[in-house]
Image (cartoon, rainbow, N blue to C red; front, top):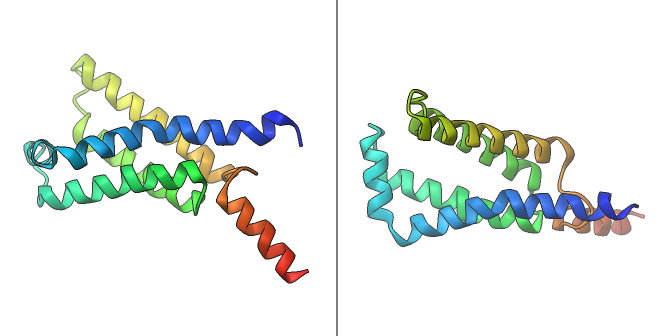
Length: 137
């Protein structure tokens, strides 16, 4: 196995997850501000939205880094990211929102790559698969 095939999936997962972990942590430390933003978008149950966002971003980001249940986590994060683009960044006439919308679209694309190709060899998923293979051999 070449070094790029071994290390690049891990580096990619870390780079994708970084923005989610930071964002999830900021929501955890300032839930009222996040709830206010969710309410300003006209969405119901803003504090439930905060809880969902924290779980997806913080826990999902950590799971993505370690590579556990990676494809499922990437799918959930991709749907979440696409939804945030639509509900919070869809005013494409505003240049800032335009940039945030397409940033979310790009992040969704990266997550779909993780969904399609998995976590790679340096992940808990791969480690568990190797152990399972040994147990059945």
